[in-house]
Structures are given as structure tokens and as C-alpha cells.
Image (cartoon, rainbow, N blue to C red; front, side, top):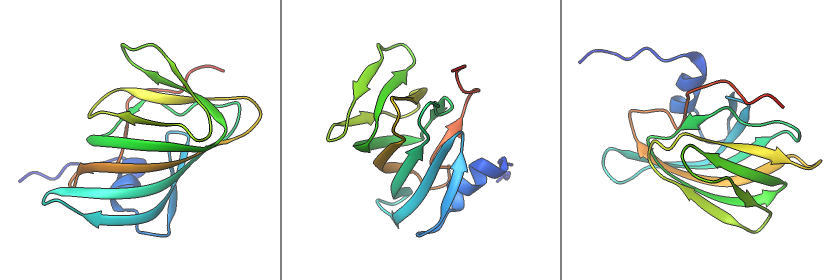
Length: 134
């Protein structure tokens, strides 16, 4: 089997331990819980933060993202779909390999609780482009 070389951000997204934080594509992720289930998959429960006035970089996940908005307001921008607006108390899902990003609105940073169910051998997220000009 040939080893896949990952950039440092993708490596952090693959190997981050519970209680640690890392930044990838403009997003700070803090790993709250992590477990291997079912076989071949990892479930990651993260606190995700993005500063106000910014956007996360476009990215994908090798599985499912389930998100609950704690603070801030955002537009979820998903390739090929209309933008969707989310406020605290709302939730959304992003399916496998959808190119998407969050555009933070207003003067509050965005805080989300996210569950990622992804293939064990792949990072939680892969950045696929630069951030939008703001």
C-alpha cells in the first residue's frame, strides 16, 4: 500500500486528539470526543469557530457532517445549491464530498457543534480552494 502525503493542516485534521485544537482552512476545530465506529469509520465531535467578517475556505468531508449553530449567523454556501442562512438553534447536514463553506455574517464570530462521520483513513476535512474575497 502506498502512503498518501498530506499537507500539515490535513495531517492535523486526521490525527487531532481529544482536547486539542487545530486550524484548517480558516476554521478552528476543537476535538471534544472521538471514537472509531462503525468499522472503518471515525466519529468526531467538534467545536468549530470562525471569526466574524470571514469565511471558511471551501472544503469537503469524506462522510457526513451534522451541525448545530451555537452562536453567530452564517450562510452555508454549497456548490450547485442556493445559499442557506442559519442562526443559533438551527442545524444542517452536509453530505459526502459536497464542496461547501460557511460565510460568517454580522458582528459575532460563528460557533458550531459539529459531528463528522468519516472514513477512518481520511482527514475530517480537505480544503479545495482559497477563501472568498470579503
